Amino acid sequence: MYRKMTFLTTVLAGFGFTAAVAQSPTDPAWQDVGKVLQATAIDGGGYVRFNFPRTDVRLTVGDVAVAPAMLSTAWVGFAGTPAAATVMGDLIILSTELPAVTKALAAANIDIMAIHNHIGNETPRLNYIHIHAMGTAADLARRLDGVLKMTAIARPVAAAVSAPVTIDTAQVFDALGKRGKASGAVASLGFMLVNEPVTVNGMTVMPALGYGTPIVIQQVSPTRAVATGDFSVTAPHVKPIIAALAANGITATALHIHMVGAQPEVYYLHFWGDAPLPTLLKGLRAALDAAK
Image (cartoon, rainbow, N blue to C red; front, side):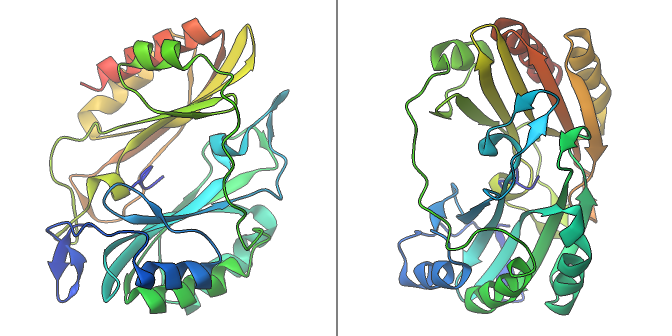
């Protein structure tokens, strides 16, 4: 996931790369983008983000009914300015939608940076397409709108409603050493584990947009929780993280890149854990420590 990715901070040839330009989602230009995409502009922490939950999908992993926040929210993020923007993000696509979506992306001149699955045993199977394009925000919005029309993603996107928190956030945040967000039975946290600049074709990538590490945990019952996400790291950290996860009963489910041509190469290690919450948190803490 570009984070994650969250996700470009330079200005090169007039388009969105070094010196991050903080953008307000309330800027009329981003509001206009939201009208085209039929979604609400939100602050992504240095970039403007639009979420597209797959509310049409009832997702399960084994016997677990998975909350949409865990696996099935597509998104795109805009960095730069409305006049010179870069967009990156994850499109979450059903297998039946894949041919039409990839054709539409090619026609819209939106680069596909990766196509893959993150978990492997979910129903229905989800494909993640990581994308990248540059242009004016208005033009990018029109191009993306044409792609989204090839899916069953419900638009206009309904406003997010925060549910009463039922997961023990104090336990989660204390164990992982960072505060995050929570809604209902789901808590989410974000980390930055790559401590050096990353470039794609010589252009610097905004860390928050391109290679953050999200961890999402869902309380299934008083004695059971599940977790997923991806560790975004450079090569030396991959093996230690996989070992730490395995030693604590958490399965590495996918390993791949999300950004073609990145230097240094960033690997995205996806995982799935299913255990009592304290056990799960112990394993995730061990993996985070291995990433250091």
